[in-house]
Image (spheres, helix red, strand yellow):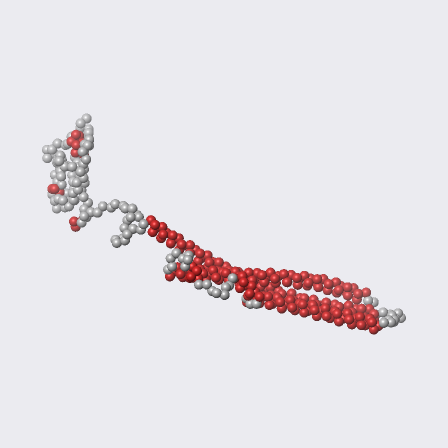
Length: 345
């Protein structure tokens, strides 16, 4: 049994270049006996209650100065020191607290309050950048909306001109229809038989009544033409004032935008709320103020345009209703005159 668990010879230490290889203490030529189990346990320190000292030695020592493994006085647990070349002392790495670690020489670590202040500053800066981006997008959308509203107002003005032209043509058609009725009535009188003469006693009164009727009809037609022309001019003036920002709508715009006679200094107003007044922060605040002022002006202008469009649409709806009534009346009169002429024989 003892031969089965026989330990093999240990691997000898590698000798450094230029030195003689160390002899194997357990070789057959040395005559030394292999250590017993008790000696190995004693050598490894098993069962010993005494603390082992960790002595360091340099690998730069010659092989002859290294302790022999077979010597009972050699401490197997001693580990060599991995020293730096050139005699430099090895430095140990020990992680430190990130709040107390000095990142650079000559700088003191930041306390938690200062770090919290820096975090708040960073958050304020990010919020301002987001606000600036939002104001830029809002300003762009406001300008696009204002341009769309102006184009819509111009189209409403063109539509008003077309409605005015349509109404004038209807008035002219109405006048022609009235004259056609008179001519049809006269043709009916002249188309009677010569054997059935119609005696009239009071021709003067009838003639005066016809003249008064013609004059009144002319007055009504003139009033209708004047009213149509006035509505067209009012619509054109409304469109020009709303698009160009003049006249009544300019006063309404000034009232809605809240313009004051005494301008306010933006820097003096924001000093109470500005956390850190730097040059870049002032530029950011100036752009924010300018964007907000432009958005306010564009909002007031869009309010004016919306009111003008509402008035223009209401007016045009009334005019379109009147055009519809005139068209229906003219169609009825033309149909009646056509039937009257058809009955003439």
